[in-house]
Amino acid sequence: MKKFFEEFKAFALKGNVMDMAIGVIIGAAFGDIVTALTECFIQPIIALIGGAEVHGTIPLGNSGQALDYGSFLTAVINFIIMALILFCIVKAMNKLMTLGKKEEETAPLTRICPYCKSEISIEATRCAHCTSELPTE
Image (cartoon, rainbow, N blue to C red; front, top):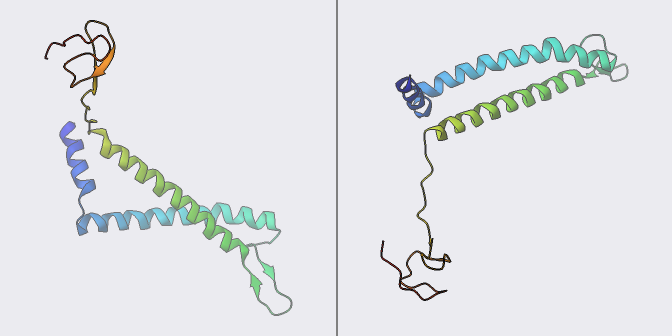
């Protein structure tokens, strides 16, 4: 199972053209799903709230032209959904990248004097508080 995750990590982090193509195909398919969601469910709700029968339009006089605010709001909602999901995917990938990495332990900069129990520099040869000669470690 560990090897599977290592292979997946290597695959996900490659920067070659094939991986990019797969990402574009999956992104396009996912975009179609989000577009269908907004056009089939969200746009009719916008039209219902706006009072229009089909797409949420406002006629402009007798010219036959109309402001199609329903399609615009659908596109905005579509963008927000896609951006939110892509953000979540990138955040998950970043977390996956740091999953196997351990934080480097930093060397301590201080130690405790064995005589007076005061905190002193790790490089000290004498305690600054009790002036005792410190054993070398």
